[in-house]
Length: 317
Image (cartoon, rainbow, N blue to C red; front, side, top):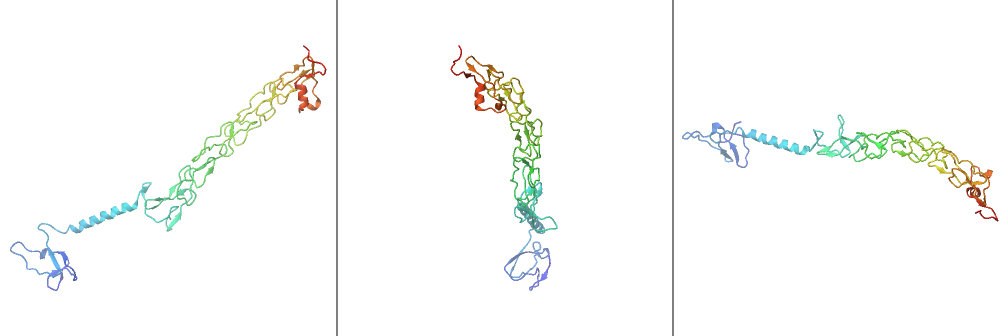
């Protein structure tokens, strides 16, 4: 301990005038054992404190430093906040959607594409965008989902269109879906049902399939043509269902692409006829008119579809 001479001649630390202070007494100034006490004088503003017998005050500063260090460490843990990916986040003043600019730059930079920058603990943090979501530049969160027909791998800034021939039927997909099934075609993500009159025979088709051939029929979502068209019906190219043979005509065989022959004279042919029916007694059944070939007039259809009563004569019994 540094000893300076005070005005009264004693070896005391330099003191400024002020209120009474408590100061440790140097060992050499401490009282001697009983019967050998030293004659000491003290300034008026000093009140001496003698160390207890067998104890030292040298450990007091170390104890104080230990307590101060513990308090500083505890404060740092409280202010540091939680960690992300095992790394303690340094506190910063950046706003959400920004993050501390990498060295040598200073300040805050916009959150890059494919990342989002929320506030975590004492500051913002750059976090990669999860799969199924997309994060444009400056994102503060990852709440934008990819829609059906799109997919978003991890770190996506924008949705990616589903590749042709693949199905992306749900929201928040992180990868393209399965190959488009037969009976469907996928021009760009969402599957489309093969329309009536067409068929889609293979998986992964990107456009509608071929027209259904004549003599067969193709309902919606057909994988292959159905048929052949049954007798009494006909199936032109591109039809979705077998069409009954019109009245006045007959369709004698399966697989017809057009209506069969016109009903001959002396016979009649109701709608869907496989063979002509003999005209009954008391009726007449004229032959089909040439202009009715391929296009059926109402009159012709009536004449050929049902037998006509002979004027002035009733049906024969």
